[in-house]
Amino acid sequence: MYAFQVLSDHIPLFLTGLGNTLLLLVLSAVLAFALALPLALVVTRKVRVATPLIEAVSYMFRGTPLIVQVYLLYYGLAQFAFIRGSLLWPWLREAWTCLLIAFTLGSCAYLIQILRGAIEAVPHGEVEAARAIGMSPFQTLRIVVLPNALRRSLPSLENETIFLLHATAIASLVTVIDLLGAGRNFNTIYYFTYEGFAIAGLLYLAIVGFLRLTFALLEKKLLVHLRRAGI
Amino acid sequence: MKVLTDFLPIVLHGMLVTVALSLGAMVLATAIGLGGAWARLAGNRAVRLAALAYTVLVRGMPPLVLMLLLYFGGQTAINATADALRLEPLRIEPFTAGIVSIGVIFGAYLTETFRGAYLSIPQGEIEAGIAVGMPPLTLARVVVLPPLMRLALPGYWNIWLTLVKSCALVSVIGLQDAVYAALSIGRSTREPFTFMLVVMVLYLAYTGLADLAFRALGRRLARGTRTAGV
Image (cartoon, rainbow over all chains, first blue to last red; front, side, top):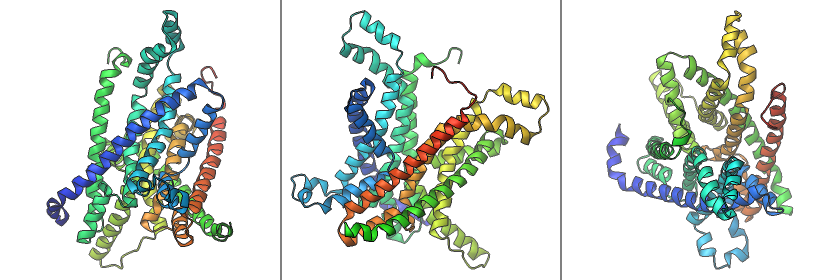
């Protein structure tokens, strides 16, 4: 196929795309996790005003399309003079920053639910045992609750990471050259109709394969105690 | 405020497109999902492998990429076939293309949902059905389907939500939905935030309404079952 013959001339283009996709994925995943963990703890504590507020905002993010959130930030913010005049404007007008904010918050909304579920699934007897031998609440959290909860949530975290990777393809709609953007540019150069999308698709598939493999290894190592006897 | 009321009908019309698209695509995805689950569980080796390849490929790529690939690749394939047969090439209309591509994408996710649900049905129930001599269709209708629907509901609900939100991407294949309307109106009125916020509220209302429907459905399907503790 002609597309694959000329592909070798455009490896740097796809590498740029790959770099942007991976950077967006890793940064937003790490930021979302760092934000979600304390928020999930607040939700499980059933704090009076904070818990319903976090739940409501999380529901709002989960109930609306990410692309609308991205457009709201990227195209929408310019509508307000006070934002255009603010110190943050040089960052906020960049597509990259808007994407990072939207992906982080969008993923955080899901992670809160995942982590909340995992924390609530920790058997209460373990918490009582930890308190009985004199651990402080913080120690109980650090030594007993969190390690247990994070291990249990590994399969859900794997899925969420893959969904986040899928979501990063939106970057190409707001001028960023991610993998899909590279595929689109490749199409434009040669008047291809779909070949660039196919190449981008295969590269996404490879990233998903790599992520699944990494998580499988992690689960094998960390979930050894859940493996059934005899298998 | 005047601007908002003037242009609101266009956005609402776009939302109608989104609603019709999501319902059509969900019906198609459900059909594909049931067929796919059947293929993965009951087909011969070749059919099982084909179904597995379909779910792995589709679930490994972003819906946006697949939508573009299916739309442009599909049109190219149709043109090539028409050329080979010396026929007038058929032009796929964006709405049909949207339903087909979203249906094909989420059919793969539902294949896994239905397969998982089927595997959670106690096999003894199915064996009992066979043992009393039920014909396959009766077996499916009386023994398999009721628990399948109940067990698949949480996964189905989740996929539905993802599907609805993916419908916001269809403007990339030229469909004039609510997002498309809000973008173009926002650009010409210089109030992009206002109109995108309207779209957000509309989506939230749509997903919220669907949540209520699913909750009611879940209660109905759970009749006659007991859950631990609750």
